[in-house]
Length: 149
Image (cartoon, rainbow, N blue to C red; front, side, top):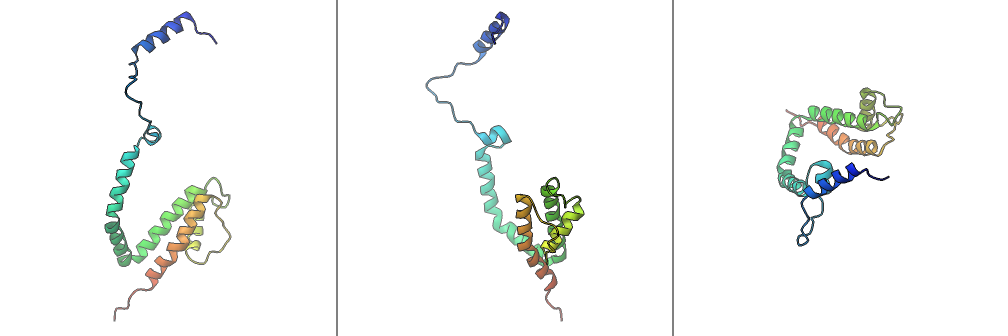
């Protein structure tokens, strides 16, 4: 496909306006995170280091909250896990048509697991595994309250 004389002239004018690349300074490699996600690798690294520094404090506060509010912790964890499971499975799993279906599956994962619904996506399986690990611990915390004699 050939360019018309007008197109060639417009392209030549455009190329003249671009700054000439300096041969002495190498072009830096593009930051793909910045290009595609709008977050630079350096910013992401700094944020992760900041989170790591606060991890102990946040972990202590979370465990204290769970100890003081075991029922709330269990319900909120199961609700959030059910929402995440629903989002992961809603278009891939014919057995997950509603949030209630997802909550039913997640609630059984945290206890006995009836095995009438299965996760079909990798994300759904990861969420289910997390619930199978954390769910019984939260239930234990809920049911094993110290006696107040």
